[in-house]
Image (cartoon, rainbow, N blue to C red; front, side, top):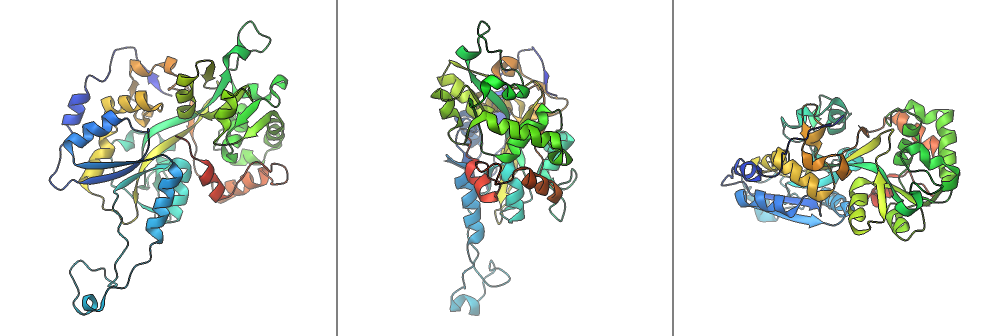
Length: 395
């Protein structure tokens, strides 16, 4: 649960936070990040103290493919003279490795498991700020020596922006004086009058999570995926939905092709700024949380500047700025003893009352999910890894 307070605590301390991030003569840093996930003021503030090159990518797919490209580069055989006269910086095998020129990149947590399994990234140095997060977060971010999710393993990622699933809707359709009751919870998606009027992300795990939360199960209850009531409610929800599309779900809402759209709060809140005829709500049953993470590409140098940048993003004034400007809540405010500043009160729709971190599935859980989403029954929803990556292009 996120705690709130009404005492004014804004960005007046921004200068202090920046001053505490001391530069180093050798602290050159290259960061490839998702565009608009960190406000330019924060990038400039850190860049004034530490020589840093930030490169923004418009799609998480492009960043993930860059990680794959770095890993796929075949070591080159050195020239004859180098084999005869070994140099001090040669690799033990006498080969020239691909050059990874970026220290940190943005990755989204649904892809973290794939990136670890494919050896695209490496463990990070321990950060005290991350230790303040509750146990579910630790299981998401840490792995043991066999790369299994455990709360006390090595740290593989540091979150900096968190979003939740929300329901966006056409305000004029759900006014108090209309026949349509307001949208307040996941269970509303099954209302008969909404049949064929809903758009949802094309991501089976998230669709299953909506069903689980509507039935008051945990989104990480793998055994529940095999229960009959979950199967029945999924089938009923499927008949309600007009659009399964991770790219066009909000376009369908804006064009009034649907009355409701379920998607990430960052996308939805940015859309509400442009289209004030739309509204949004965090469902009463709770929401599903997803985070943008800092990860280190395999082969990248883990220098002090990289650690300083990750810690910088967690300083309260900076975390507040990231939350206000990027439509995503800093994970700092999910720590048990953290207070949410007045700028991030409930009216901003940034802070859900309750949210669950979506944890990696075990092999049994993956089998249950695959059995739940039979290709014959749900042809529009895709479970294979490549599709899940291609479809997860949120901004």
